[in-house]
Length: 108
Ligand SMILES: [Zn+2]
Image 1 (cartoon, helix red, strand yellow):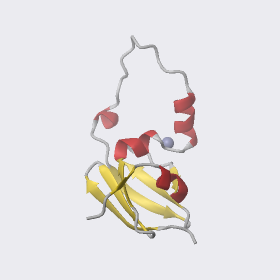
Image 2: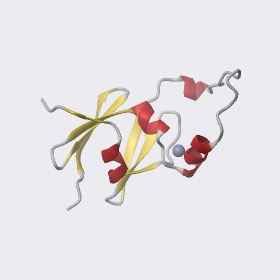
Image 3: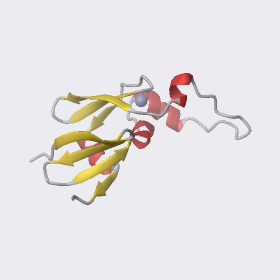
Image 4: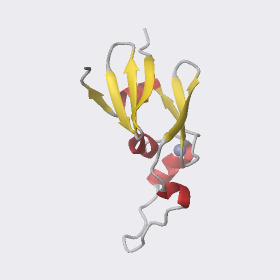
């Protein structure tokens, strides 16, 4: 039996909350999800050597905005693609990887 999300919601504007079919509730900072984006472009970026520390990172206007999730689309029954407010939407987050990200929260 595969554990599936039963509820997707935003706990706050920058935290995603997923309720899973086994009763577990996990919260995911949007920034963490974006930083762990599994698409090829982001994987390459993460593996690239860090820029020299004397160099300030230059953020584009979109990157300087607080990061939000603008949508989530199921991919088959094993993953979700996430639309981020910075326009990035090529990451496919498998349910397995989502179970490993974020933090479990106490249910109230
Ligand atoms: Zn990506």
